[in-house]
Length: 418
Ligand SMILES: *[C@@H]1O[C@H](CO)[C@@H](O)[C@H](O)[C@H]1NC(C)=O
Image (cartoon, rainbow, N blue to C red; front, side, top):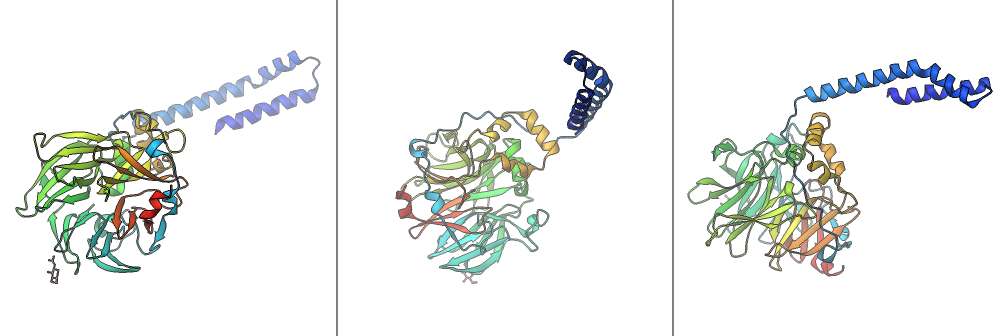
């Protein structure tokens, strides 16, 4: 702040000297230097002092996180299956104002179900929305109330009408899809492999009633999700819960924000989104590699959220944010510098980090080998900017978004109109 003021002062002095009308330019320059030297030195000292104090304060401030450096490769070029189009821009805003942040979707007996940011589980029959139940207790809607309100995230349903819900604050729940009555299968205060769950996020259930549940972080809750992404600490994991024996154990750890979980069609492996690292992991459940984890697809053009089977045999991947879709990639540059992240953690509100991500909607379809086979874009983010899940239902894609106040809906025929 001192600098511009000083510059103004300096200019005044020059003007003043000029008005006096000196005989030679040389002498004007000389006079000006002599006249302003002392204020200039003073101001320089002041400036250094202010910078020094600020630096000291920033150095002394404790960092509320332990940010890790991560160097991304350059994001993939938007060509081939990633060539831009406007298909996702044509997404209809279905049920606008009636569903707040619908994250995940299931179909049961022809009806759709979703869980929302106000702690509700909703049944959607045609255009009619009814409340099935709540995971927590109102009030809802603020950072402070979120843990008691509950936040239903990933959902799955079995053929009997048991709705399994990963609630970010209340654990793994089983809800009667007709009555909304529910019980807690894994409460938050149970230690699994030495740690309580911090951020249950998504789940998949196999034919034998075994549930695979992601616990995104040991450090951050859902309401601090930007801190989680920014810190990049690999303390996310996947748990295995057997609904018959009620036993739970950890099967994967060391993941930087474990998120979407889906089973392969033959149930021989699990695909798991590693959100902060923009990649998808493959964890073998059966066969000679059982228990081993490999990277299925790396360097995605964004941060993957939930993953769901596609009717074409692969997987739908919703991207919560994109990388490199609109010019230079600020977020990747930040992630590569731990000192900068420490500084950001100390002095900035974390939600500002969002500003570093381009406003661009993008969903992907990958095949079983992890290759991107199709991508649907919304370059101006008119419809869905942060997709959380893509669910096929009655000839449409229903697109959940944890921030939207509607469900995205897109007829499958639209996908061919590139
Ligand atoms: C849900 O509750 C209804 C009414 O009590 C009951 O008839 C039904 O069997 C329950 N469903 C499940 C999956 O337990």
